[in-house]
Length: 276
Image (cartoon, rainbow, N blue to C red; front, side, top):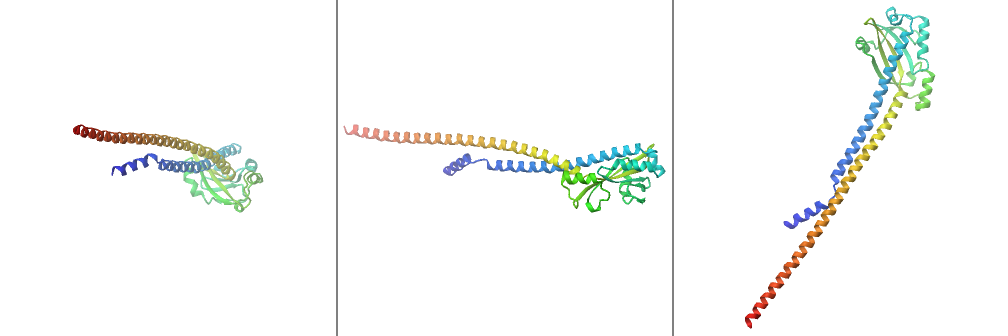
């Protein structure tokens, strides 16, 4: 039984910490994956936040340049000169459609000719708009369904981001509330193609994620190296202790054998003395 216990101890002393290293490797992989996908999610959220701020700034600029400013929504009309101003503002941008809607959800001006009547998604926006909240709806739309996309915006998508003509576009439908003396009077609803913005943000996020993942792997590799080095040092010490114990056991055995021989010699001497 003692011999079996000794064998087990020797095996335990000489083994490597494979379980700890395996757990460390899995932890590094999982943390790197979480960093990678988290960065992409963050990039998408940042692009959406950016386009919301951009739309609010655009709507403020547009309203400030109207003859009647916010009251245009109470009057349910804008002059022809105002229409040209609005078109100049969104031409050459990724904004391809603009709608002016009154407090009842009726369209009184649109960048699309002859687009009048109730806005079909008004129920989705209305409640939040009345609380002075900018509402954004994101959806994927095929290129064929996008009407009025500006040449500049399309060229930018093709040249800078490799978006093909028949690829899906990420569209942000943004409704900015309009108030006159704390009274809700309507909304400007803008449609922006944010495909390029999302791709750019995600690309930057991937670069940051790759750097962080590399840093994480480097840290975990350093920890693994320290564990391996410590294990090697401990195994070396164990081997030295085993060798010392073996030498000690051998010396003890030789001493016992020598003592036995001395006892036998003493016995022979005693017998010889009796005979004499």
